[in-house]
Length: 349
Image 1 (cartoon, rainbow, N blue to C red):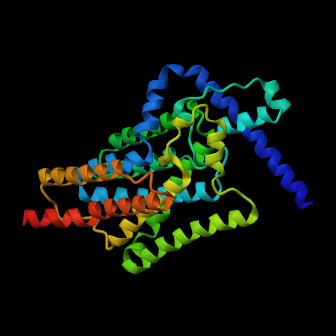
Image 2 (cartoon, helix red, strand yellow):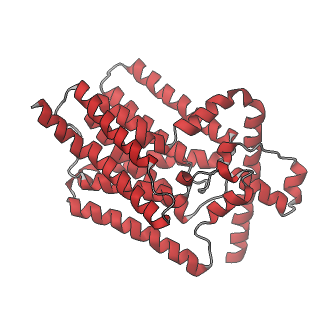
Image 3 (cartoon, rainbow, N blue to C red):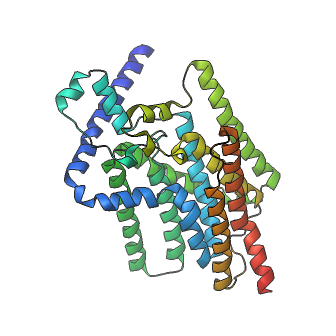
């Protein structure tokens, strides 16, 4: 009985993927004129750009907004990378090419054809859509901040309409590039909103925790990821399955980026999370500082961070590479949230 239920669930899931392939195909056929926009969205609105560019830019305007964006989006992004590490779901091009390679008559009979792009060569799993999660969190936090400062209802309606249009554009971008199925995009946005809601609901509890407790939680998450790695090996699963799928089906291996691998994403997010934990207690309403000083301080921090990114030790082994990226991201978030505001306050005083 249990085996029949499992087979029924698997068949339903496969039918869902086959049906959603038609959505990807329709978007590619009818929205090709928007390809420059879709490429721009996928390149410049991905989580790494948020952490290294957009969030620091928002920090020029308000330290409180920077702190809120950084710690909330870090939690959302960590949820995404953990999910991709634990259960890396198929991407549209992988699924379609597996069907053709295995001689699935139903898929071949339907005549589905998807175009591959250089940006289609993602090396992590498809669920949840990281673009959808991180940008949804960014826009929700930003719009909430702006709506609180504006009591006009019409402006709020306009603001949330813009957020909706932006998210639809992100979903279409990922569908056009065949990097995600529709359900992965929708679930990504839903998980982001759900995570933000839970953070807000338990914000008082989280702020009351001591620094050592939050550092221990980050170390526990790292231990969980390590345990998942060895459990997969023990059960005969490949922990780097998604990377091998990308190598198998990507038309040009040079299109793949090490920054997109699941182990890199997890290391980046745990590094950012460690920086946030070391910054406790968080000051969401710090004293105001000079805009020019904030601009200069953040500019110096980001130039230094960019230089560190350029000199990432990619040729010195995986452990050195991951340790460097973890430390760099932890230092980056710690500096933006804790160290820089103190330096600016001292100069203003």
